[in-house]
Amino acid sequence: MIDIKNKGLLNEFTSFDIDPRNKTNKDNHRIFSNVLMGLDNTPMFSYLRNLNTIHFQDLKSMTEYNNTNYAPLKSEAMPLSEINDLNTLSLPRPARKIRRSISSLLNARKSVREFSGRIISLKDFSTILHFAFGVSKRITSYGETKSYGRYFPSGGGLYPIYAVVFVNKVEDIPAGFYKYQPYSHTLQKLNTKSYQQSKFFAGGIDTKNLNFAIFYIYTINKTYLKYGELSLANSLIEVGCMAENFDLVTKAYGLGSCDVAGIDKQYLENLLYIDGVNQVLVLSSICGDEK
Image 1 (cartoon, rainbow, N blue to C red):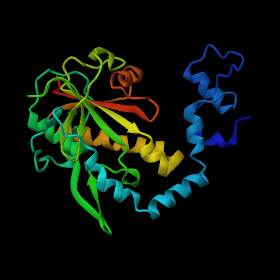
Image 2: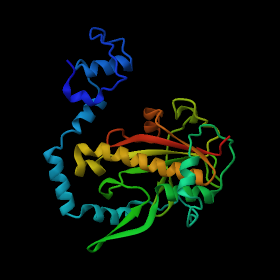
Image 3: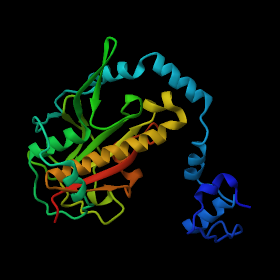
Image 4: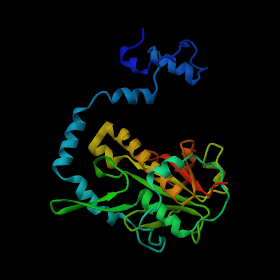
């Protein structure tokens, strides 16, 4: 019998290919069928079903965080976490506005994976990072504290995802990995192991000629302490908003982009000294002059 809890997974295209005796010769079709019949399980399905229940400890934590005004206090302190030393590169002042309409950008947006290799200007690069991931002019006051807005939404205003930029062909910036610091609008050079660009993605990406790539790093404790099991859903929504911002802004400057989930996660986390426990790589975006 099909578990009634999974009824929403069924549609007119659902078919079954059940062989519960053969656990070693699976493909996604067989796994999907076995999950529906209650014969198998996966982390993804378990997580989605878990969202049907709001846990008491999560409600308690959310109430406590709201009562203590935690988000505005954290937001006000965020600029203090940014580093300014010999490895910090200041970016030029970004353009004040994007001169293309949102409707024209939505119509023009498409995924681009092959690039010409033309170097892009430092000014355009700076503006793209600012409008995709930076701090807006919107400031919200909560009593004596102030919250600094960004160009994308974030659950509780906690902003648990930061952008690591791999620079490849950008005017006046040496190739390598940098952490984008939105409040000071700077790049912090990261110490990494030696790398091969061809290993970043699963395949089909022109890593040689792209101008730069973004790797989105989620810091779990920034949201879990408040939202608990709701944290992952909030953060995956947030990274989608960040990636869409990036796609539209890059298109405004005549560049192509693509959001890439097919990344060599283990290789990149090891390369960037990301622990894979509290900090995890969740998505990437690439950008370049379309071939």
